[in-house]
Image (cartoon, rainbow, N blue to C red; front, side, top):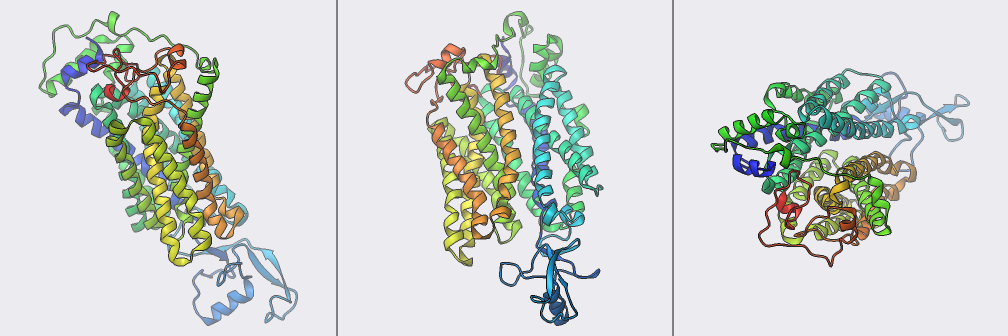
Length: 555
């Protein structure tokens, strides 16, 4: 029998799979905290130049107020002070600072402790002329994300899924804990790069292991439910960050739980599917018979005919997608959409501190939006199809982000919640789009280049993640109310353009997947390949159904 038929025999999502599935999802929970903790450990609170060794940001009394007024120039915003400048006096006449002084840059700062007691930014004074270092540090994490996904994928394909998982877990434990004890920028950036590599590796390897663990009819649900663990991790982080305002203790609180993954060395089995592709049939069969025993199922004496069931798929170079204008344009649109969806998702997460109001409430609402966004495809994809769900979610998210410009420019303080609400709607759209694009794009690429094309898609997503922190700090360049709205407007415009371009992509629900480049060229909205009772016995979760069954049915 084929591998998928064997999974049906042992139970597609029985007691054994549920246990391993939960264990594989837990690192995604902690990965979300490691990604999003950036919002808090690199948070930049309100600040101004220090006027003495024992100065504080909070005004201690009338005498302190007068001294600050004489020492720090006012900012453009009423009742605030310049963040980077101090007065230096020409004479002893300090009663008239405007006419008897000149402005100079300062080298020490005091920080508002309303939201954060300490952050890495406040400890290293990454403000004023050093504020760009914060964005570079976030980008280094996203660069690690990209490198980790590639490296862990290579290890998982060549040495085994379990080894790829364990390597990612080592990087998930050691660098994240070590970050707590670093005090210089270079070490911090290097360790956060490795932390990003661990998250990229864990997302890539755990998703693959889950797809190879559960039966065909549960793969779509298992893949999307995996992302709910991410959303739950972000919600827990919101609570921890609210309770722990010191960045070192907070980082330790989100890093130490990863020590619980050490027993995975003994608990998590190797992927039986990977063993079969490497010719280790007996090991794979032993694992599947153990699964059957735990699930109270029985298997026939002869399980596989390896020679017939697990031949290597014929692949072609990915540049074959460029042989015709149709495929080239379609591929470029898909790659661009991957970049935009990732940019929108991570950008909205990083931008919560710029929305005004309480950063903890904003972050909690943004995380709650992910739960809604990830849950929607579980029903909508089966009822409406891939393209309507994906395009609608992206256009909705983009429109919500663009509309924030109106309450920001024309509203008053009471309109602040409308900005936060529109940002949350944007996050719902981004989450739904992220959950959908995995399935949608995998069904659009032909089998012979699907793995390579999905790899390029992931690369484009990581590039989008690396760009997002720079868009999130546009407000530092533009300034004023327009600067507050500008990051969301930019994210929204990108999302809107990507959604409109995605309208040209064909629907894939209930249709036979393209196998060859020639099939993909002829794959249009008018070509339908549906059968009523086809059963997919494909040996890979992304290979096309034999009788025209969609990837949704296969998953």
